[in-house]
Length: 157
Image 1 (cartoon, rainbow, N blue to C red):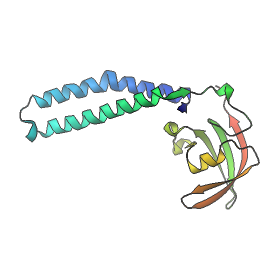
Image 2 (image 1 turned 30 degrees about the vertical axis):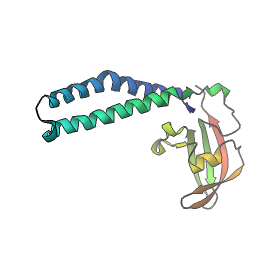
Image 3 (image 1 turned 90 degrees about the horizontal axis):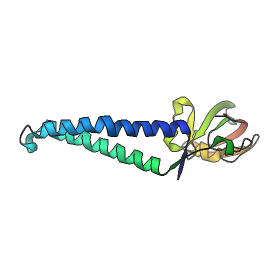
Image 4 (image 1 turned 90 degrees about the vertical axis):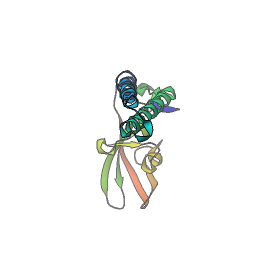
């Protein structure tokens, strides 16, 4: 079971609808057109159309499975004093005194450029269910990071 924000759930549902209603019919038509051009064994257009069809079907199935196994998070039910999904956490890396702020999200919402890290990432997992002032250790590829939680906020929706 995966938990998603309402915005991410809606975005995935919209992408799935777009793929099913617009992209796949166009891909199917292109495949039929390429197939009608003759010998499939020597038809680059046909092979490319099959490749695109496979990618489209794969993405559709992936999105269907994600949405089928996902639930929208009720932000009102989340704790305000502990790090949880959708928490915005500001922390200090103790070895460098660098301060960072990230929102903890599901793996399907992760976007480092937008300041969103997965709860399954080393830092996200180390921060989960901790409180302001806690010092945690995160095992990252470059070694162990010691982090002190400075603040936790949860946006009201």
